[in-house]
Image 1 (spheres, one colour):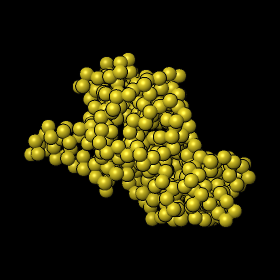
Image 2 (tube, one colour; image 1 turned 90 degrees about the horizontal axis):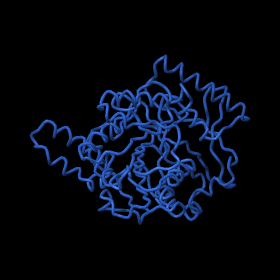
Image 3 (cartoon, helix red, strand yellow; image 1 turned 90 degrees about the vertical axis):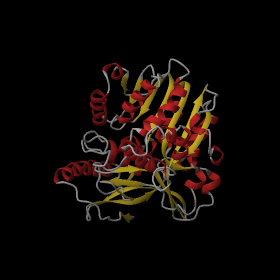
Image 4 (spheres, one colour; image 1 turned 60 degrees about the vertical axis):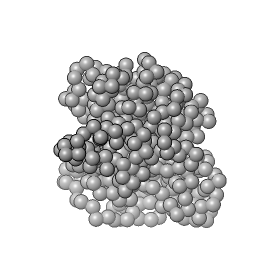
Length: 393
C-alpha cells in the first residue's frame, strides 16, 4: 500500500473543491462497496466521466490557454487547414462522411468544414461522437456561432457508433483519455495496481490486488514484458483497442486517422520506462498524481500504437502509415501553406509561431504520432509520403 505523492499545485476554488468532494464521496462509496479496492480503470472512469462531476462532464474550462491544456486545433487554424488536405484525399472516394471522436470544443470541426468548403471537398455529413453532454453543448455553441447555416446542417451528434460508415474517422487526442488498467510486476508475478481509501489520512491511496481480469496481461506483448525487471509498472488499455476494433468493423470504405501521444511497443515497454506513462494536467501544469484534484484535472496515458496497428491482422484493414505529427503536417503541405504569406505579414508571424509549436520536437512535433488504417483504399496517402515508421511497430 503506497500513499499518493503530493505536488505543489494551484489551490482550486471553493466551488471546485466542493464539487470534487462530492465526486470523492461517490468514489469512496464505490471502493467501500467493492471491499476496499477498485481498479484504476474504474477510478479514472469516475474521475473523468461521472455525469455533472467528472472532469469531462463538468462545466470548468478545459481547453486553451485559460484551461488545463492546449490541443493542436486550439493553437491555430493552421492545423485544420493542413489536415483538410489529407481529409480531402480520403473523402474523394465519393458519398463520404467524417466521423470525429470526442470533438473537444468543436473548433476542429468548424475549421475543417470551412477548409473543406474552400477545397470543394465537403463531406456528405459531419458526425460527432461525444460522450460528454457538457462538451456536446459547447460544441453546438461553437459550431452555431462560427459556421454558416448550410454547413452547420451537416453536423450530426451521435450517442453510439453507426452500424456502417463510409469516409474518414478522425480522433485527435481521444485514445489517451480512455480509462486504463495499471499492472505491477512483483516477485510473485503480475498484480493489478488499483485505488483504495485511507480514512485516517482522508486520501486515496495506491494498492495492489490480484488481476481483475485473468487475461489482462495477455494484452501486452509477451516477448517484451518477459524481460522486464521487478517493480515495473505500466498501463494496459483494452478499451482503446476495443474501440478501434469496433471502428474497423463499422468502416465499409475509408480511413481511421488517429493523432495522439505515444510510442510503438518496444519503446512503450522499455525497461527504463518503469513507472508507466500516466500524466495529469491542471491549469497548464503537468504532473503524475491522478489521486488528487479528483474531477478537476485531466488524466491521460500514452498510446501503444503497435496494439492499434495489429488490428489490421484481424479486421481486414491496411496500415496506411505511421509518422510523427511534424512529418505528417510537412507531408500534407504546412510549409507550402505558410509560404503563401509574406514574412512581413503580421498573420505570417502568428502562423509561424504556431507552426513551431506543432512541428518542434521539443513541443508537439515528435511526441505526437499519427497512425492511419484504411479499408478499400489502396492509393498512398499524402500524409505518409515521407518518413513512414510503420516498420517500427
